[in-house]
Image (cartoon, rainbow, N blue to C red; front, top):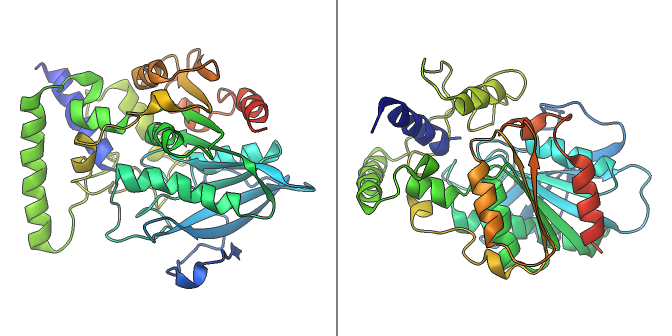
Length: 352
């Protein structure tokens, strides 16, 4: 394996290891969370929506924290959208930007932190689970479907980066999700099991990784706490690939840095790849009956994830949109590139 591929895989492993409250009816059974009162997002607050903090529990009893955005002067029951991602981010970053923008366009929206992450509950911290994190989307649907302001028959979801694949996985499991958008998506099972660009797609490579992760589990148990996997480093290697420079430009600068963000700081636990290696996401994607829109950048290193996921989908209500010239992180926060007009039309056409 040449030096550039080795460097790419090392950097990729580091990255992937990384990184007013409304009460629900059953909140008396939920753990209280310490929610930030002030506006601490990476984007300006809109004067066209009302914002509040909300909490809800998933099927595993973990309390999730979310920001709810409601269009001002809205009347009647509204279509709703739950948003999560990117994989190493928190709701104060790209997910919140998407949620607030879609609320400006008439949707009641939630940007939520997944289990074990950000302001949401779950111990130990910074754990990832393909099962539980898929469930997190359905838990957001539970909350929205029982909200008096929401039309329960008009609920969609948006997943960004690694949460794009999880959003498609959730859509396959939960028919209440009437429309799904996967933006600049990763297939987290594939990249953990096969490496970037499938460079380690062999039993030998996976077994070597399994041994490394198993040894780390033993060490974590001995120490009594999990080792952090590391987020985006403060200083980039001289031979860092362009996509990693793009991550650095988002997570490690004022543009996108947030103190609770995994990729901005110490990342997820070092053993985070364990469940994904043996848990193929989107294995039932071909059975999704409701609408799906996959959006990817033309120049994104991750484009192959979106295109291959789209190939699994069936039916004439599935769309693939490639944004000319866009890289992976352009679709995090570049308002001149993110196709909000297309997403608005997609949701209004399919949430009916």
